[in-house]
Image (cartoon, rainbow, N blue to C red; front, side, top):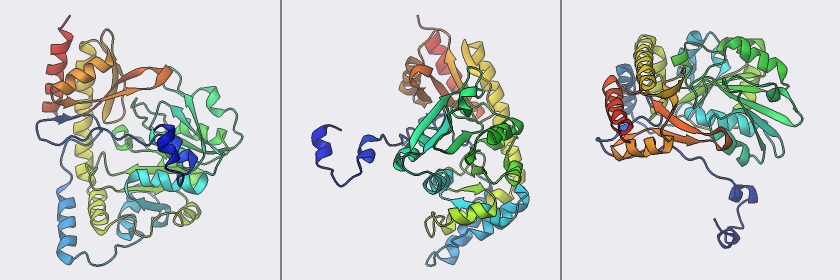
Length: 359
């Protein structure tokens, strides 16, 4: 946006005009394109979800939904090992991140996260007039001593665990060390935790500064439904409720999410399929000369030893297969590949083999 355009938009805050909005992954239309770029689940959701949504439709949608999503909280509580009033539901976990940021970060306060990680953290900080304070991971994707330094005006820490784009994981003991080393709340973003088999939900009871966000978009195969939730101590939830929209989760999403969280058998089977394919994908990529970061998520992060990541991304796209090319300044770039079905992975390998054979 040039200065002339800005002068015509004087009713916007200056920091909004300066900021860059979140750029979502490509969502092309058409059945011929293989999408391995936005970490969607390649398999249909639990059949019980479809049945639950149809039952709501049959009963009519003329009434407002339950503002607290009580049915979901009641169903999820025993699975998570908490009381229902420890759960806050949202329109995807992105809304949960937004609610927490709006509640805890004011102008001039710093928000810290390891870098590179989920780019939405910066956007949410900018909206609040906060100061983005990313601190680079160590080369092995662990936190450095710098992450714990200079905590003046530090209002919130985000920790994606497993991290995106790397798929790497900090075990709960390391997370607890982080919480004990900082003075502000720490939001542990567990969008991909089911694929890791490790969660920090049990840590929430140990410290009120620990908040854990989850989503049904990934492991439950419900990216199109938009439902996420937060686990925190009830006195924290009580304050966050003041921030959320009155009816932030619609009746269809509440019914579908409740059915999904209840069907733990389907979840376990789905996660196992994705893990198995993830292992196969990683091995095939390594055999073709890629450096693959060991992943605990439903995607892998890789770079080829001899070929440009951008070149590979563009070649795949020209052959109707999308992955996510990501560039992080001095950190460098790479390709994030969502774990698809076995057939989708076979198609990826075939196309990659053709470009790697070229001089």
